Amino acid sequence: MLNFSLTPEQEAFRQKVRAFALKEVLPVAAYYDEKDETPKVVIRKAYEAGLINLDIPQKYGGQGLGLLESCLATEEMAAACAGTATSLFDNSLGMEPVLLSKNEAIKERYLPKIAKEFKMICFATSEPTMGSDVSAIRCQVAKDGDSYILNGTKYWITNGGLADYASVFATVDPKSKHEGICAFLVEMNWPGVTVGRPIPKMGQRCSNTVGIHFNNVRVPLENMLAEPGKGFVLAMKTFARTRPTIGAFGVGAARSAMEHALDYAKKRRAFGSAISGFQAIQFKLAEMYQKVETARLLTWRSAWESDQGRDANVSASIAKMYATEAALEVANEALQVFAGYGYTKMFPVEKILRDVRLLRIYEGTSEVQRVILAGYLLGAYQPIMPALEDLPMHREVDPLSAEAGQTAWRCRMCGHVHYGDEAPEQCPYCFFPKTAFKRMGQAD
Ligand SMILES: Cc1cc2nc3c(=O)[nH]c(=O)nc-3n(C[C@H](O)[C@H](O)[C@H](O)COP(=O)(O)OP(=O)(O)OC[C@H]3O[C@@H](n4cnc5c(N)ncnc54)[C@H](O)[C@@H]3O)c2cc1C
Image (cartoon, rainbow, N blue to C red; front, side, top):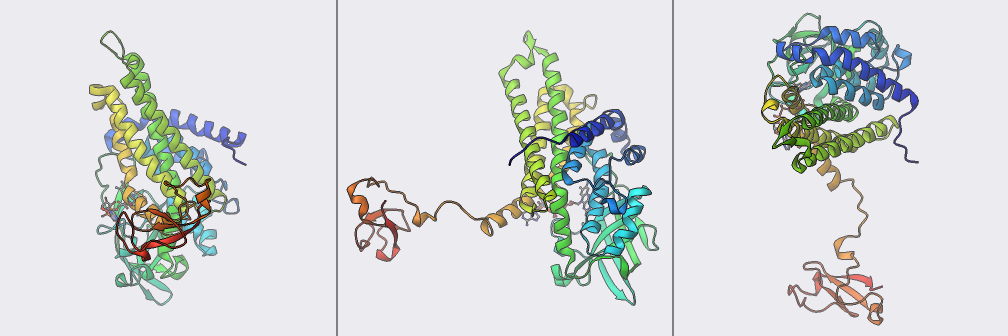
């Protein structure tokens, strides 16, 4: 049965996050963006209000909510400030490899601390020399007794400057590509861990982004999240769980851009009337709305699939790709509605535009989502239509007529259909020989 409605609990949760986002996030967003600083006080308040770490199972002290609830919360937070939302929900990204890990002891040791002691955890696959190509990780570990020694640099790490822990992906041998990738939970105060300066960014300036350097960091064996050869799959499974949330970032930010444009269009006057009276502006608003609604449907669908325990890899890619590209288009068109004022920092749309630009880049670029979807289409996808050579496409003979009883042969090169007991010696259209014809079966 198909059901698009939220449960009363989910709706109440959405209202709770919305109220928080409007009261605590929205009023400080422009200030922290200007300062290029993460509002740590807001993260703490969100933690205390139970609005982050939603997915920690109850047995580890968490709320045990699903990905759909996470998407509801993300949409509301991102509608107020996509940068702050990135920092708020980065714990879920950092925690996902722990949740997916087979190492039960590590869950029991760290998840309660994240749930109950306001500990933060970041996620680190990317490096200065690689982002999309996770198999090209250079951060290296070498076994030493009951520990691994970690060396190398991670880059672009959200909340790296605030976090207590990091889920770090490394390799035992860079030449062995996927087969060498492993993952560890690293404590950020261990000797040899150095955090770089915050990276100055175009947008999402309310989220902290840094490099992290590991110099002979001793990581105990019990902190292994995935053994060598299993880390790559763990990273991919993590993304399948977190990409719907990135879709929700797009939905929230686009919704706000649309609402700001709607408000402005009703008030701004040109040529003697409100600009909302011009069909050119109305069509922009209509398309924005269509994109927001479509993006939300795709996001919810992939989150729902994941919560059902299904493989959501494909739907997560679709949601991430569509919602983030839609968000950029909506924010851009919203700025066009504001025109000159939109281009200033006095109105909110230029910040939204800067913030949403990142969504097409992190957690798998738009191009990488296309690679994933093309790989699926060319591999596991099961078409409904018959193959072209078997397509019952009778242009010259009415399939219901008397001739329909004859055998039909289709030229695999040009598509010509020949009727008769035998295929022709040569195709009358493309001159390919008899062997080019395939028996289609009876014309009816
Ligand atoms: C603000 C910010 C926060 C981030 N937070 C984190 C974080 O917390 N943790 C983390 O690990 N990483 C993080 N990242 C890194 C992010 O995930 C990478 O930037 C992203 O995966 C792209 O990698 P790259 O920048 O190295 O681009 P590259 O991989 O070098 O790609 C460059 C271009 O080539 C294209 N390309 C690459 N491969 C293919 C292909 N096979 N087919 C077609 N096109 C291709 C890309 O789409 C892109 O357009 C963050 C990045 C930013 C900017």
